[in-house]
Image 1 (cartoon, protein in one colour):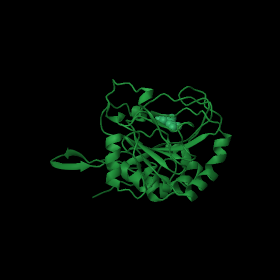
Image 2 (cartoon, rainbow, N blue to C red):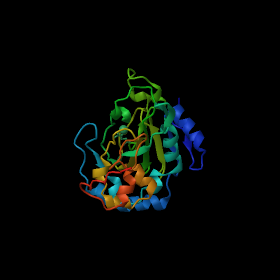
Image 3 (cartoon, helix red, strand yellow):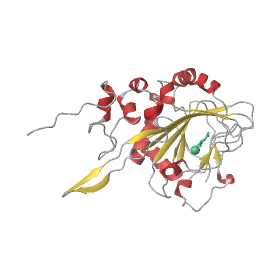
Image 4 (tube, helix red, strand yellow):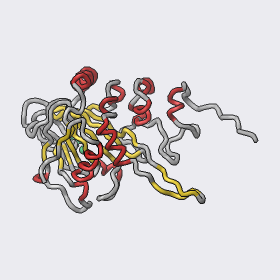
Length: 290
Ligand SMILES: O=C(O)CCC(=O)C(=O)O
Ligand SMILES: [Fe+2]
């Protein structure tokens, strides 16, 4: 097959989900507006400039990576709640799971959560990253249900020459025996402000930058809510930074319960506790008497 399909932000969500399930990835042109992109650069540019190059073969020795993004800017709401991205992640991962509880047949729908965040700036001289699946973190077998829907927002133009993310369309359908080959990968070519959405089971990797201009991308991963987050958001994002975001984003950052009951605090919804000033070891609640 050829490279990935491209859609506009007003594309139909069901159509985008269909493309993602078929090809494993899609490019959304003009994913965010210019004002959002400028605000992100203002907040995050200095952190990138201050960041040293990586020091290993996987993360890249001519690549700068900055994480804890929700702590570093309060401007990520339009990115993570972009309707085609969040909408597709919800439709693809929030599938009801049937179960018995006593004699009741019930269905539990998992939450989704922000797992990892990173700015990735690939500088000239950086070679290709090994092709990999990011859901390898979840130690799943393939093909199988999707546990991650990921975004790469182009903070600068992505080209075939400057390291635009390499993607093997359809590779989420492969089993765990078939190895990815470089000649099967297509570079992601998109303008700053556009976004690549791809499923965790798709083989991909950072491209080689043969130019003298860096390629800057922001990646955010949304994972199933019953898995451990890749980046520890509770440590990465201080409470004040979480509170700068609206309820939907706070819940995505992990202040939520995944049905039937993962992630509670004091047997309650952690979202409620986030808004109170509880810290440290809580008082025991009085026992409820009949
Ligand atoms: O920078 C890119 O284009 C992709 C990076 C990536 O896939 C990773 O670090 O896991
Ligand atoms: Fe990756």
